[in-house]
Length: 365
Image: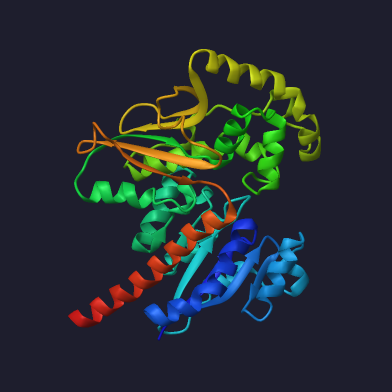
């Protein structure tokens, strides 16, 4: 039996979906791959809760808005620095929503743990920090869910590059949240109503400005650019914000209450695009060379991006081999369950490949 222990950072909507998926499916993994997957700890900002005895209670507590400290916690850095038992593979899942525990991720990677990210922060810091983390983690790093939720975006890009193809450009509509809002407005919803519905469905963060600012898409574009081999800094990726300037600094509650003030101006942009036979989409363009572009763009109705509906994402890879008919990946790009499926896939890949490498070493010995 191959034992895997999880240390999970983040117990928000995605984190809870991941934990519940692991608890539900791990019996199948044991039967199919002989993987015995257990939780060593789950952690939020208040600390780390060890073991699985109170895991279900912890998930329910977080669902109600509570903190793990109420159940008794220990500092997360001690949990990560503690070596696993001999023969056990540790995988750290960084699913944090706000803030990027980069030092903890780096500590885990340097300690030999596998590292799975849905948190974009660690891979969108300075290029020096990005290189330090990716070099330390090596083959134990997976980050599919940072860009396309559960869609095979990073794996598709890596497959193209490893096969010797040249990727000239990636065009993407990588925000299910913004896609949902834009398609809702096209169907006649107000901008404010579409934003509130996105929050209610957990497509958007509780403070939707985190999505509307464009920073989330800029981080995804930076991660894709770096996966292409580009040595870019965060400031090399400018982005357009959809947050009205006069509502940037107010509280979340006031922002949601006053969002109607932006309805007329936004509706005007949608109508103007429609009068030219176009639709609005929030896109990222990541070329192999030249500036990365992130912002609201008009696209013709013949474009594959115009056909996106709801929270769908689309990623178009134009390459040397696929120049006339590019490789396109589309599918749902928002929602806890979609993102959780990407995280769990990466978890299983990291765990299985770690044991396979060990077995290969033993064969050579």
